[in-house]
Length: 210
Image 1 (cartoon, rainbow, N blue to C red):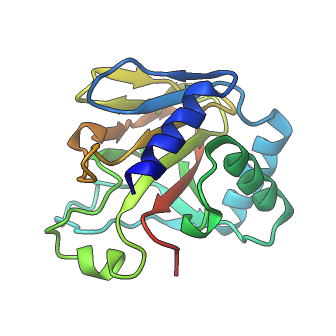
Image 2: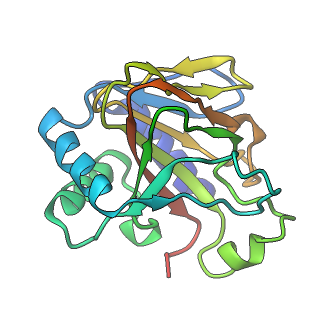
């Protein structure tokens, strides 16, 4: 397991146009213009076509916690296949460990309050979501468009905020070196103040997805 973590980090650190965000407590990388504009436009069209209200695991009853819309991309779609190929070329993670690619749409006023992408080991939904494929390991998130105002992603522990830029990739390791979950990955998909935000998210698991 540790070998996978080191390999992904090493690949990202050596990849052209990828920058590691300096912080000793979190492996976080960014790459501008990871996707070309025409591909972003095609992905936005797919999200608009199949979007539905987003959900969360271990809900605390706050209906305003995550107010975006979500869609699962059809893995047989040509643009979804191309995206998978680009991600594999970058990170080298066995595609069998990947969850289906998700698209999210945030209209004006929508947000995803501060959260982590891993499943809480003692949460009520942990067994339901992790029994087969295990915990989430890496997150790869891509902004598909710039936003007129708002919609940034804020990593609260780092005190670092990333603004949406068309085609920009953010990716981070949800685990600590010992394999435990990393609370420093806490991040907030901040409220869109003007315009609409579209993103793509790809999560990977400890074991093959199934």
